[in-house]
Length: 226
Image 1 (cartoon, rainbow, N blue to C red):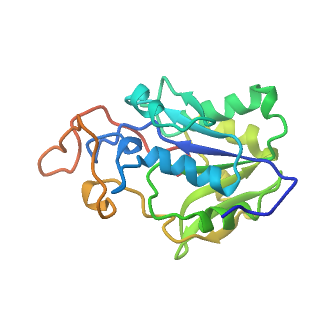
Image 2 (cartoon, rainbow, N blue to C red):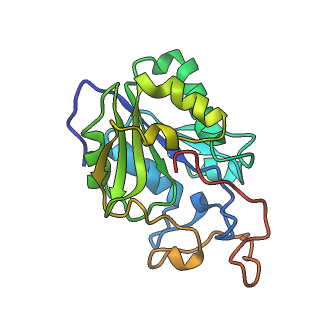
């Protein structure tokens, strides 16, 4: 479903740089039952809703993830992806603020790669509030989730918060934030039992450590918009 707020350009952001330590593999590389990877579906969801362009962060197993990013989307590699929650978002915001081709982007719609239950309708409902001065957060049953949307008026503040390792929590907590009910907004995939029916891990996964649910590979922080 494409939102109808014409005259407002919104770029999409898929945060997909993490290693998926608790899951045992990068979430971006998880396959749905039909064989589509999480990262491919996330990009298609935002593109189908009208976001242009869509930016995808990569970090763990970056080349593999990038290979599943559809043509037309832009890969933003995050060398310090494991350093903290705001690393990926900080790189995206720096990219947007420095690229003259994106000067007319009015807002960013930011989502996590591992939200398999969010639909195009949910994304469109968030996009309906897109403005340069907007701050919008998806909630499910009142609980905060993703996607979130920030207008261009807040890009520099968001960049500072992300660089400081705080993500967008402070910005999203402001009184003017619009909250939109989106089914599935909080249902991210942290462990194997969170996977939707038929979904499966990619080859070369890392088994979670016994008794902890934690993987033995390189860890990753919570994405910056959480």
